Length: 319
Length: 268
Image 1 (cartoon, helix red, strand yellow):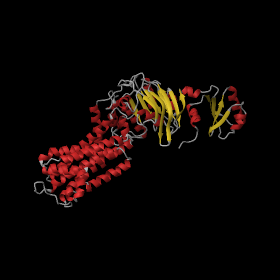
Image 2 (cartoon, one colour):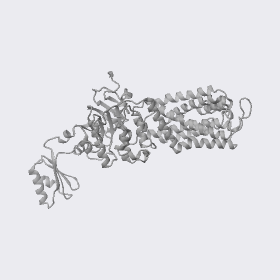
Image 3 (cartoon, rainbow over the protein chains, first blue to last red):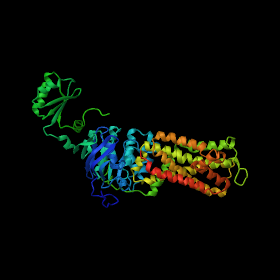
Image 4 (cartoon, rainbow over the protein chains, first blue to last red):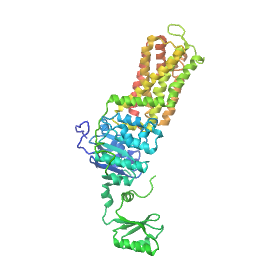
């Protein structure tokens, strides 16, 4: 493919990402199997998938760390391998785990990365805002896992990139740090930064993402806004409740009109799938009353993203 | 989500590459301070050469056969030992230390993290070599100072040649270190870098001068980077002679290793 003339700061009309037929194999394993993905600028896209689904490989193909076996990658209109030197100043990268000299001070590492950019954020401010102000001199290896993650995130955004790649940015963080990072990601998006992140937290994807892509075994199995993915069939609502574990779900299903499914999703947690209306709710509570149990925490609603994810990628544990 | 913590526009994209000189300076400074803070690196780069310098000067353990200068006068032991220890110091820091730290930097994702910044790829290596040169300067100051206390009197007319040899030697061993540390797993790098260091120390022309070896072996040893650096420094600092052949040998090793390393070095 011939490269059209490009400005040094990338083609401002080009989308953040344009992947076509992207394939990467490692020996006999196909890690990424011909995926197509289009991500407009200014969006936050969450890449979901079980471990080993191909998320990190996809990100590393976009960052130019891996060379595709087939297909094309365009990041901000640039080929990350052929035009890597032009692309790298435009992007920020947060790799999974590590990414710093074990013995380097926290602030020293961020300053080193900040020295690579033309207009970096204020390093002390960034450390402060990420709760790292007190560990400026602490060597990287002595930081907690969550602190290492926050430093790594700081390194990814300090040079005010157009596009950031964040590989599991909140892994290993406590809930406070996670909320802080979510706030930060929302601010990035609001300021027009394009964000591609991978995550295992459905809440993270549901709250933050404009667009969710679920991949499994190197294929895209679902793609859409969180609302579109979870709404699905308007008939397909569900009702959840908690009660004593071990109720006979077949008996309950028999007490409901044709076409409703009942499952005990975990001991004591029940889910009724189908078009849930007031009659069905009353039938369920009436049946529970007959059994002498109280249905608690009764909720009616759409599927959540986790349901969609498990439906598409299966419930078996991945090795 | 409203964000009281981050004023709108805080993260508005303003990408761009920083000044190369500043990037290079910051990177080289980080690499230098990390080396000087690292206990095992200090042992390798300073304490072992220092122990050998003092030990070899005060004890009679090495063959004394070539304690003769080119003009036939006897050479004081400290004058004979010091150039060889300087060669060892360069090999320790620029090759062994460099290879091991690169091996582990790759393991810990540092190399990848820096490769993902606007830092051009060539400065990744240049920064390390500048750091190696700074460390070599520190080694020369410390080892030269101790040698001076032990009575070292280098031939001043050879000092310029010696500086040239030290610089080219550092770049040469640095390239060899990057070649080894950039291609293999960290544990294997650690083992190999130490084995090679030990072998070159004993049989590569550093402790045993080529003149004390059988002729066939001496020819080979003179063509090794360790032998070339030690012999070149001896010629310069003992005899005040030029050592263009040795300089050429070092340059050839450096260019070959550098060319190969650009193909074999992996980011992780």
